[in-house]
Length: 155
Image (cartoon, rainbow, N blue to C red; front, side, top):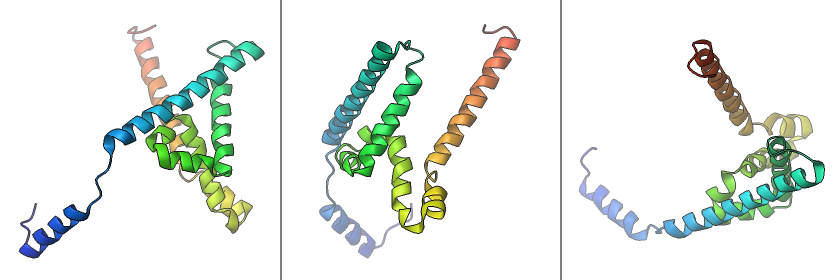
């Protein structure tokens, strides 16, 4: 780090004096509670599919994830999920509902530019990279498992 001049040191101390202290512990608790609540709702959706549509635990995962993404998109459309995100931070962004929020937020933001160039062109701006990473990671892991199976390391 370069040596600071007296005016830079003075400015740095002024910034530190006026910098707002962030309540890290409270933010972590909020994120934990909201993220946990989202997971409880997701588990309830899974149990609903298992109970009323005779899915198994393994097969109920896909419709449960799709339902949670739909809930997040629906709540984002009415502005509820954005307020939840401001309150909970990563607690609302990390679960799969954060993915739904990211997709629909880009669509809403660019709606004024038209449905094709605005919504269609920007809806997968953030989500597209997530999808590409997921597909690439799945391909890489499948390749590794196939090679390990071929050489008899795993079955």
